[in-house]
Image (cartoon, rainbow, N blue to C red; front, side):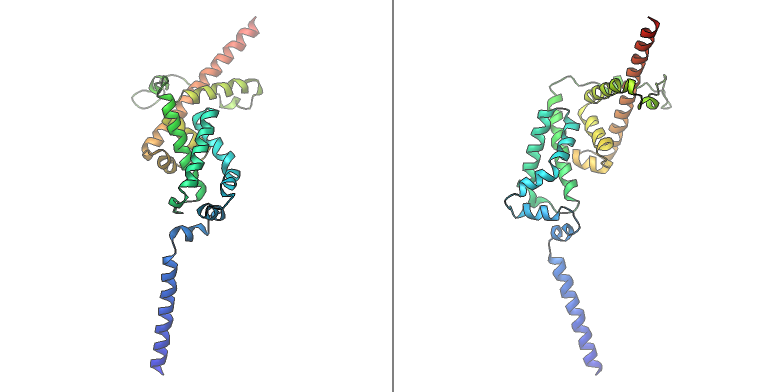
Length: 238
C-alpha cells in the first residue's frame, strides 16, 4: 500500500515537471506577450498577415510621429524617420523578444532613428556651444547672476506667444544629444535608463544632458521675458 502511494506521488511529481518543462520550452516572447496589450498585433506581424502593417500604422503612427517631430523639429525628417522606423519594425519583428512592452521597443527604434537624423543634419549646420549659453556658476555650483523667474507668468495670455516662440527657438538651438534627451525625458516621459538604451548613451550622460538642457531653456526663456518686459515698458512710456 505504501509502495502504491509512493508510486502515485512519483508519477504526480514527474507529470508536474513535464508540464513545467513544456512551459519552459515555449519561447520567452510567446510567454511575455500574454501580458502585452499589443500581443495580437505582434502575432499578426510575426505571421506577416495581410493588413498587419496597416494596423501598426493605425495604432502607433500618430504617436511615433509626435516623438519624431519632437526630436527632429522638422516635418519632412519626422515623416522619413517614421516611415523607415515602422518598416524596420515590420522587417525585424522576429527580433522582438518581449523583454519589454512592444510599444517601448518601437519607441526606442523611432527615438534612435530620429536622433541619428538630427545628428546628421546638425553636423552640417553650426552647432551651438552649450557651455557658452548656460548660466554662469561659481566654484560652489551657485548661479553667479540672477535668473528671471518667469514660471508664474506661464498662464498669462499676453506673453504666451512670446514664450512659445522662445521655447521653440531654444529647443532648436540645443545640440542633438541634449535635445533628444530632453524631449524623451520631459515630453515623452521616458526614464533615464530608457533614454540611455534608445540613444546608446550611459545613464550619467543622459542625466547631465537633460539637466544642462533644462538650464539652457530656463535662461533663454528668462532672457525672452526680460526683452518682453523692456518692450512693454517702452511702449507704456511713450
